[in-house]
Length: 284
Image: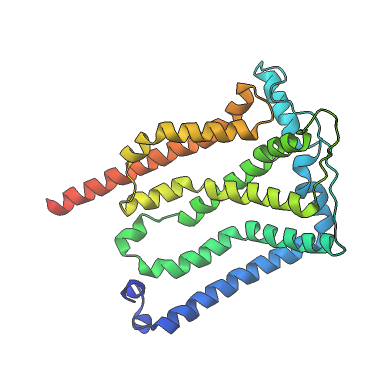
């Protein structure tokens, strides 16, 4: 357990494996309490949260629909980004469906809101294992991890959500109109959760690039070589998500994701240069 003896005080220098498990348990318990507190608040105001937040991406009056349409007109793109209102009639197929969905909605919302605190607890457990030189490179890490997570969550909610639900809700198989899309509440919540949490995690790419470069698993030259493959993958994702085959609507999704990849390259390059400089100082 030498890894966990670094930078600890004398009273904790000989912590046993059980002591570490107990400390980890305390961090986990505090994180769970934070999630539950946020979840209880959301559950109390569940009707407002459901009407104004959860169903936002399928609401014709959602702010993103108007903003995208106004931007499309401002950029002289015509109606390329103007998505027609989509009517989604959700259903609950079990007696306890709405109750269980409200609990799920509250817990997921609690995790998202309490994310900075959860990471802070995780960081308090990991921090004593780092050397002083390593700690200097982790300043403001809680801020940056939380910042990228919330940026990704907002991107998934305000941009990918409307595009995805508008496309899937209006997609029609066959020409006779025999099929009607009527998703369950659980199905809708699962898709919305995947978009928000998925984008939140995906936007941690710059932080991940920083860490992987620090431990030598990734280099800026490798990320540059993979740029063309990353661009193709992002274009495919953008083409699947956007409801219109128009290249402008696909571009509005492609740009933020590709920009994120470019930011990762810049961060990786700076970390690599800093490591080379320190190695030169040590050898001189």
